[in-house]
Image 1 (cartoon, rainbow, N blue to C red):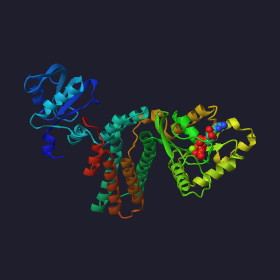
Image 2 (cartoon, rainbow, N blue to C red; image 1 turned 120 degrees about the horizontal axis):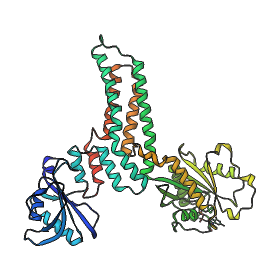
Image 3 (tube, protein in one colour; image 1 turned 45 degrees about the vertical axis):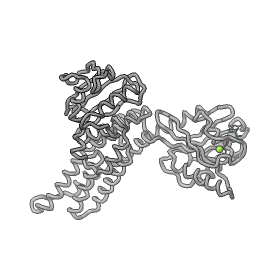
Image 4 (cartoon, helix red, strand yellow; image 1 turned 180 degrees about the horizontal axis):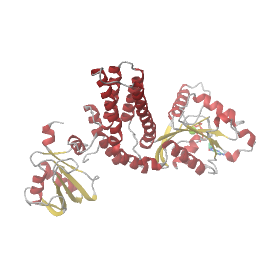
Length: 459
Ligand SMILES: Nc1nc2c(ncn2[C@@H]2O[C@H](COP(=O)(O)OP(=O)(O)OP(=O)(O)O)[C@@H](O)[C@H]2O)c(=O)[nH]1
Ligand SMILES: [Mg+2]
């Protein structure tokens, strides 16, 4: 950000869109106090003290009877002089005050994320704190809120790792520069690096959970045609998301519904039923069903109990059609149309290799088992995302951060094979730099633009 851009005083409506009981208009920059003087016609203000403030335009017309506060920098969110007006939240009131501010010299309306950008450039926040703030503002579930708050400390968590790496690197460099005086015990260093590697891998695993909390879990309903997948998504979403009919092959494309389970956002996908087909469109639909299953955190394998014969064969058939599932994907076998079943319990026994699968019996006709299925999914997602309290620890949850941790891990893995001291030291340096980048100690302009553009105006 240029000095000129920083020198402008910015203002924005920082509360939600009018009408509302109260609207907060915030200013940041060296002209803030002058703006306050002009609007209130007062000249002296006690810092950080809320006061009653009738506001006037340049022709002394009363705009609103508001409350206001003056907060001199640098101990403010942006690090600059800041003023906040708490005006009545009517659209005309807000517009009138904003219009009056716009006419003042060297004052401009703020762009999205501009207050936070100033806080960052004035050293009030690091990049991971900026990202955490963005997450907090967009948090929709309890877990997302807790996760966002936990992210405030990423720099603190990573600093010791980075310092250890730099310390190890310095030892390697000293051994090169002063070969006669400094002797290097490589095995001791290898052990230290392995410890750091373990810490990075643990972080990577917790990041997978963090992403699940932040991005939401994906659940796919997969099975043959006419087994009741669309009926089930309608039950789970508690609304008519998909068309249900007795005609096999009714659903041709994947359909999504967003729900919340165990304080996690969940995207449930209904898919086209799997069967042999000559129809090009249907075959494409089935290909998409398989892709949705492969991308899912939880696959609900739906089976029509009244027609499935031996369950084990049916599950085997469906898994074969889907192909490779991720090792972390949880599978629940849903035995639907339980109301029609008159079969043999012995036919429902699953092979030991499927012992990790949950099995739930449902009927979309009588609703029996549906709440049990919801409970079972909730538990499965809870296991995948970790207990709710685990969000108290610091967990990474950004793709950008995970990529950097992966690259840092690769550097350390390469370190182990580097016999040459200089190359080994370089791997340690690269790893330390990548870890520094996670919390934003080292930043590139493009990443900054993309992060700040996700903010709303007024933050
Ligand atoms: N008796 C009974 N009928 C059900 C049950 N669930 C669904 N059905 C009926 O089964 C038929 C197929 O249901 P859908 O939900 O459309 O099945 P689907 O798996 O989405 O089918 P495709 O879209 O063709 O793959 C409809 O006539 C439903 O009313 C159930 O639990 N019991
Ligand atoms: Mg369907």
